Length: 129
Image (cartoon, rainbow, N blue to C red; front, top):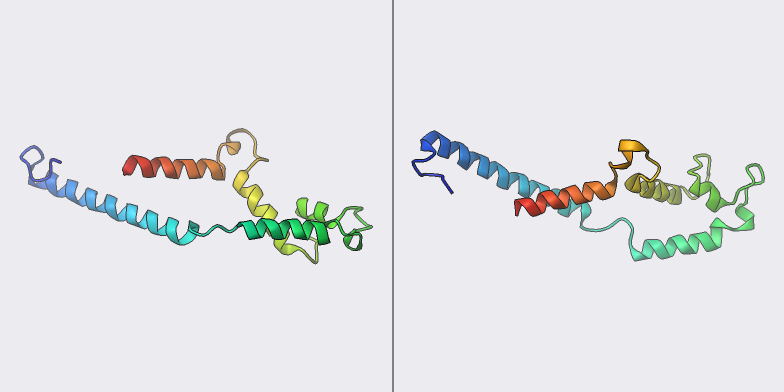
């Protein structure tokens, strides 16, 4: 608003112009990162349906029951058992969901979750636009 007026002077106007341009570039970079990395979700309706199918067919199958740990495959996946020779994709999926939700955190760590990051990004975006 004050760029080029006598209120800032020539160097103040130049500094304000540079900062405004840096601001625009940073917003474009932020939008680019968000667009490239977050425009298509990792978990879709198909992923959810396939997880239900896995749970019904393999997760609770008697053939996949572990007699040593006395747990079903689904229970071992939910426990993030790294000794599994199958169902590694399901373990990764459960691990990523838990990292995002951060429901096992305590104290201040509970505040720093994926939902809070999303809200902070949205608030910053809305305040800038």
